[in-house]
Length: 311
View 1 (cartoon, helix red, strand yellow):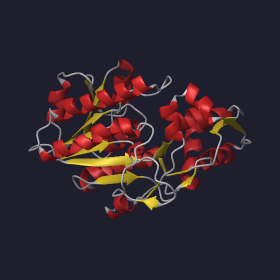
View 2: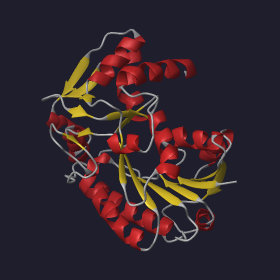
View 3: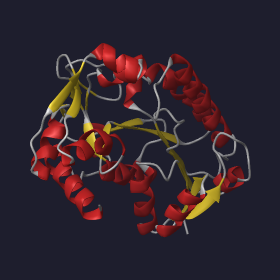
View 4: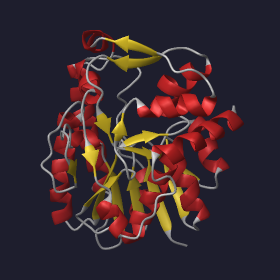
């Protein structure tokens, strides 16, 4: 049976990808660090592999045997104010985890590697709809993931079949969308919003990200980049608007001045939140991929219904 080795498989995107890969008939092995993660991985029919992507270990042998590799793991970046030092640690950890994973893989036997990175690498792109060939303008975390992304050319020269995937603003019944939108709305609390002009961004449903990654395993072209975003860039406040409608509650904003955000979250996260980008999904669609939720108008009501059902 064809096998996939996954890093970061118990995270937000991984939780959408792994069950789909199992359902598609792959043997899925997921690198895990905790017993809680092991239980979740086993519950969906995947095989947990003990180890830490930041440390060498037996897991590298498991990775080397896989037909496909999906590299979702990201260094921990949230849960506290992101200072320059934390961001620099993020940069170094990202480089190390990539090196440990890629050094264990054999270019002759691995069929494809899906490398997942953030659109903060492309940064602020203004009002134009852009594709993967646009010049990156790293913002927020972008400058700290750039060294890892730019190093991929070296691994490609070594023969590793890397396909790069860049999901946009990934929403679903978890992560930031739950914490900053669904939970406060359900409690009839105000939703935080930065002061200043309302920015545009390219969102995507987490389930479509999982489906797209699985699709790119077979259809992605080596050495190419793919934006995973839905059909329509939106004003960032459109997401809480639709969530409030689906929940049947009033939407009230709590405006947060940018300088306060910098004090609480740090300047790096704040810069990410004030970045504007409109990304095209044309290249992904050219591979034959079809979105289940092509717009937030279709996706967010489904997220709300799913979240209410599982609460």
